[in-house]
Length: 98
Ligand SMILES: N[C@@H](CCC(=O)N[C@@H](CS)C(=O)NCC(=O)O)C(=O)O
Image (cartoon, rainbow, N blue to C red; front, side, top):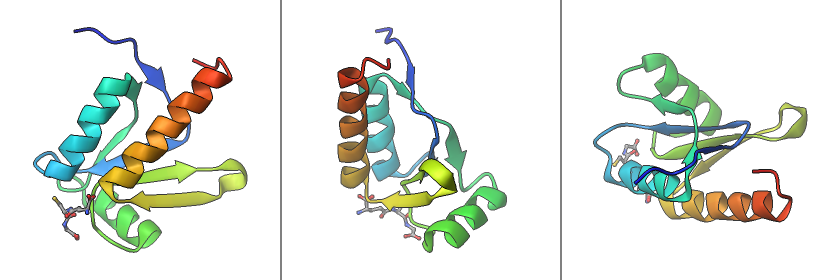
């Protein structure tokens, strides 16, 4: 089934392909029709280092959120990430930004 892709500015998902929690988040992204830059931490040590230095853990999935004025948040936990993304999508719809 084809879904129209919506983009969320300033968001990136750190993940690796075989991680079941990452698959859960990526499925939710697909289901919501959202497209985010994906940062694979197994194929790139640069991505893994960025996650560790920025977020403090190498745990994935982790959503990097760039707020205004370069304020960066690192959101861990698949359920929290999915909840946050749903809220962002609802907000986008309410503001008719999509
Ligand atoms: N409760 C977490 C579990 C995440 C998790 O266990 N991720 C594993 C990969 S499947 C991981 O990153 N382990 C390595 C680490 O914690 O550094 C979630 O739901 O996101």
